Amino acid sequence: MGSRVSQSPDLCWPKSCSDGVEDRYSWNPDLAWSVLQVKQTVKPVQPILPETPKPENHTRFVCLSDTHSKTNGLSVPQGDVLLHAGDFSNVGLPRDIEKFNAFLGSLPHPVKVVIAGNHDLTFDLDSYDETFKRFGHPRKFDCVEVKSLLTNCIYLEDEETSVLGFRIYGSPWQPVFCDWAFNLKRGEPLREKWNKIPAGVDILMTHGPPVGHGDKSKYGDTRTGCVDLLHTVQTRVKPKYHVFGHIHEGYGVTTDGFTTYINASTCTVQYQPTNAPIIFDLPNS
Ligand code: 5GP
Ligand code: MN
Ligand code: MN
Image (cartoon, rainbow, N blue to C red; front, side, top):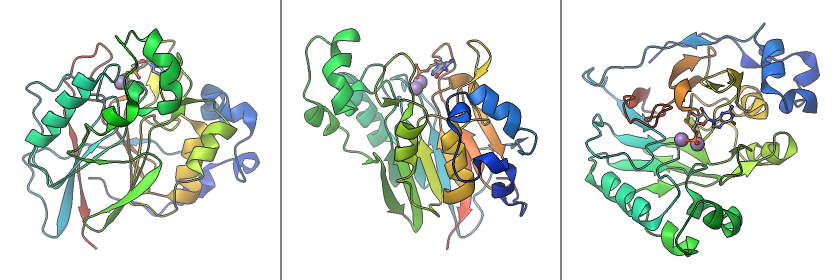
């Protein structure tokens, strides 16, 4: 999907941001984007159709996100690696994790890589002490036990895996919104998580988008993406693909000329699972 031009993404950041993002930008994605967009490239990319044959010596990746337990009858194209960028459940109940795990088990993809999102409450041990009451769990479940139900995938939480020769890193964190799981304040707290991402991974998976790509919320027509995440992606990590979800209405694919950004939200903003999985192919090394 998409040809690459050799533009250096570093040049897109104003001087004041090049050593790190100033707090006034970190904390306000609309303000940050009003400054950044002058030099940023955001080009829509037409995803590969499922019937397109995979080129020789390539690996096919199939991206899902935000399935929110609505996997019944979901049509998932064939591929080598399935990626799911979080919000696989509604509130992280064990039966939802079992259902998701059975769904993964029913798919033919040889490798599946999954991260959690803000809805997967039982995967965030720290916030679960509080969220289990607020989101109506019948009792406090044992998070370690619930996590262990997810057996049919590689689960990543601020860590990297190597799959068929490709480096993939996954992280569930996103900017605070209504105090769900894996919520962190913009600025230093999120920056600390992004600083753990190693440079040069091929594919980055986060639950939330970076600012400027698939991040516009229909609520208030505001940008919701993380400014520090885009800065990290463009100036240090430079993945070939950045796969995320979370802002369902941001579904689609864009490029900045180097990295391709995939908002793979399967559910629409009305939580209908009607957005098609997004496919890309990478040449084998
Ligand atoms: P979810 O609850 O599944 O994580 O997100 C569902 C929807 O809530 C998104 O599609 C988006 O409309 C809205 N939403 C999630 N996070 C944010 C945010 O940080 N800001 C705004 N304005 N809307 C958000
Ligand atoms: Mn979601
Ligand atoms: Mn979400």
